[in-house]
Image 1 (cartoon, helix red, strand yellow):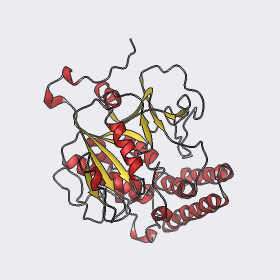
Image 2: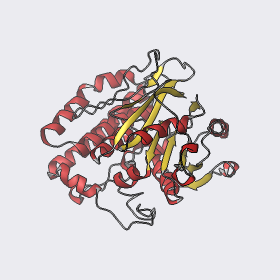
Image 3: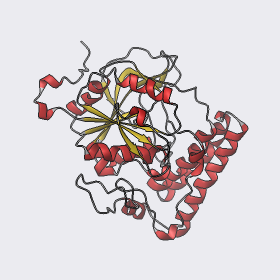
Length: 364
């Protein structure tokens, strides 16, 4: 028998069964795409769950799906990170012990997905986040995610083995540097202790950022090493949207987490990998967006360096709480979203532009 055992709720009392909130963020996905996603959810055999659909496009009517999920309307396009945080707060306010973030462009390959993701939490007290093995779709024999690496201070996240055949799944859980936002189960404690996703990132690099912050808070990230999901991802090319945020957010995240020589090394690394990322860009427009994103990130880095703001000062600004709600999370009407949206010291300058996200469909 494999050493991974899906969680069986019959093994514990009803009060001990984790309550899972499923959160998905919609911007311009078609109704057919959303129907397909909800059909995937119907496959799941974990009954102690509830779904929240975050409408990230104000004015769009998603009432068609109100019988399948709770609709959460955002006040504006908050990006994937802001939408995910909005849904997470609704789930935690409802008493969920874990939140499962999922993309809508996925195919569930095993109906015990939730049980499998809960397994590391059952076995390891410090588990805070868990992602499944994910293959490409429709080429379901090829790896998209089988654990991730993010070596500091370089900040170049990698999915080892991406695009290669999936061989010999060992049905085990393994520690990993980073989980992946395409499908990740996160404990309520992690969301409260870290403040959720960094909304300044809007999308991309949010999952390595959260993984690192969770590990620094004493939690562990795990991979359930079995292909439980397929992701509709077209290779490693970068669209204009992806290119902008890859160029921008790598520098922002490195600036936030590193200081001094390590920050300089991170910046040098990002400039060194720039030709490779430009090569991955799928069009002239994508290359222009990557350069534009990189320039935005460099502006942030320069403001921090000129102001002499230390990593400790930045983290202090991150950990300054506002008025907590009954769940321990900040109220959504506050300027600090969900819990602790990064608010850099005033001398750093104005908040970075959110980029072109409002003009593109969101996905990960």
